[in-house]
Image 1: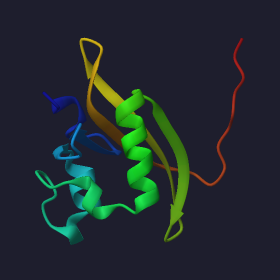
Image 2 (image 1 turned 135 degrees about the horizontal axis):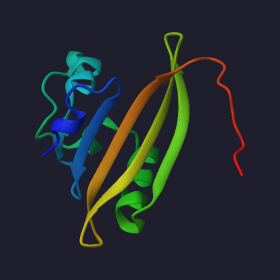
Image 3 (image 1 turned 90 degrees about the vertical axis):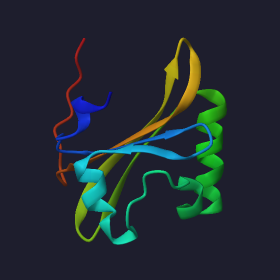
Length: 109
């Protein structure tokens, strides 16, 4: 089901509506290797109360959360969105991709 994401050059993590991690692609597994195998574990256990609140909001509303971070000199864009089946929220997908310090921004009309 997730073959398309297996070898992507960004980290992809998928959870269900209870926060149970269903899938992590190769890059996500490498990123969090220090925490062991996270598939089957609850992502609420490794997030702050503020982050947990945001996750619950996304699960309830089917919304999107996007932001950038910098860690150890590496900038990343984090994109979190609900995944749905027949219009019903089934969980969340997080895509984390490394980005350069400066990026072109294009306005297309």
